[in-house]
Image (cartoon, rainbow, N blue to C red; front, side):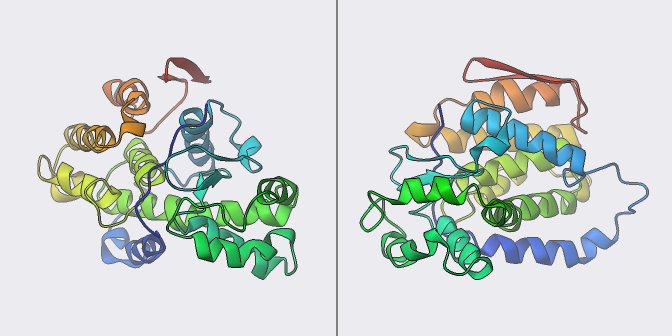
Length: 271
């Protein structure tokens, strides 16, 4: 069962955060030869996609989710695609606008006026009844799948990895950041990614500030669990408790396979 996504606002600011981190002096001080592969290593990124899909779609086959679309009743309108783009939070609008730029006259482009009207609400006005089927048809187009990949990276993946590297945390920590941004977004509310990170910083220092990585990641996951419990839809914290904490207890900071974890009682394995 697809789990709810609670987001607070448009997240385009994350792209600016990610760009500044990548270009910033903190990144420049880290030796590429000395640093282990981060989450942006292709093998690790594939693992990250599978881990998120296990929680979001109860499947390791994340590529099967390009065509996914439904209203999961979380107040964010339609949730769709590989990362749960939502018609009520702006990221779906950004995605369809990008697709329209790359494939003018595509079937979804006709829904852009409606997507602009419903942004910030859970309304389907102007989208029903045809939008879900149009989305599923668009998902057969490689240009739309690539647009989903690119928006996932711009808004969620790259900012998470950039912030993680700047904090001096490894692949597991970067994944913990990514999973938090996927679920909570990075608006200004108390359960956004940046607020979760600030809460963790109140308890421990990251390696970039001279702290111990395991101690800091435990503090971050504690803060993440707190944030999840503020939303009824996220009260099940197994994606942290029986997944990320398992890897952390095993001190698998590089997310090296084999990986065994559970989400919502289902067991998964990456060999």
